[in-house]
Length: 169
Length: 68
Image (cartoon, rainbow over all chains, first blue to last red):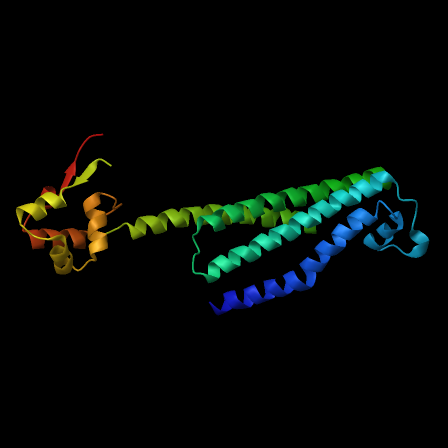
């Protein structure tokens, strides 16, 4: 279980250093962008001279993007909670099965959502029709989501096998 | 479940206590209780053999099939 401790420490580190501040920044930016739209320049990493007039549609698209990021952060939080369950030596708990299924569904939603969002963004605002069929982070998120759903099914099968084994006299 | 475990009947016939049988066949009383109550999903041949040996009976004396 040494590997589990290392994984838990790394996940805790990422959670504290990256996720908690990013949630705060996202919450702040999602409200402040309606007050001062120039903050979107920081969000999209634009230089000062590149900042254009950010309309309401871009603000709403950014809000949707924030929702997707927020969902991914929440998935990471749930994953962290399942690791705590593993540490308590309860690998086949129904909480883990349900949580992995939930994480899978949310990641698939996020991956598809982000893909649709960026595709629409380029189509509407840049008038570019681009479909990336190669290895993209969004496709990777969808794969990860499906993997979690498969993992949930595997754990469900394992739970039944474990119960049957325990009831074999 | 359509398989009935008649271990209680056999124990009464042999005037043996569950605790004693559990000790002889080498399983815990909790597991024997699971077996007696019919909650068990499976019985190992080794366990069945030990029970038959201890109670001097046949597997059919312990297990019975009843149609649902």
